[in-house]
Amino acid sequence: MVYLKKFIQDLIEMGADFSTKKALKRSMKLIGIGPENVDRLYIEFKNDHYREKFKSIEPKYKMLFLPQCLRTTRCKAPITEAGYKCVKCSQDCKVYAIKAKAEKMGYRVFISPGGSMNFNVIKKFRPKAVIGVACMKELVLAAEELRIPMQGVELLKSGCVATDVNLEHVFSLL
Ligand code: SF4
Image (cartoon, rainbow, N blue to C red; front, side):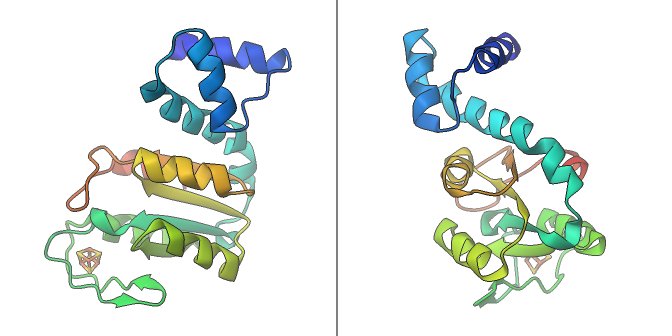
């Protein structure tokens, strides 16, 4: 993957445009790279592309999106118009850990019931940048739609419940 990224970066420097997943997918197909690697590459490129800009924006202008599937299975959070409202019922919960740290820094945090609601929230609050934890499919959907700096963190284990994420990875990007 590292060599492939370097190869693509060289192509970008030569003028190739991989700003959409479709463009990247077509080009990768030509050199025999399967679709399973394209999504991950696409998100890595978006993250690299926006990293410095994202860092330069103050947390109070940024939003963090966490997936509802990252909650514990005993979650007591009620669903509201503003997503799930964490009631801090579990010290072991990764949603709680990430939310507490991000809010202390100044982020607006949204525990998302689903992708379409995220875009409504972005329209409403107009953040200057976003960071999202999600499965690869949701990250790609967001990356294709967003026109502001973003950072995407893929879940370690996806699914509809009891998913997982690398906390240190998320904290390092905040
Ligand atoms: S700490 Fe919050 S998000 Fe986590 S299980 Fe409890 S209410 Fe749900």
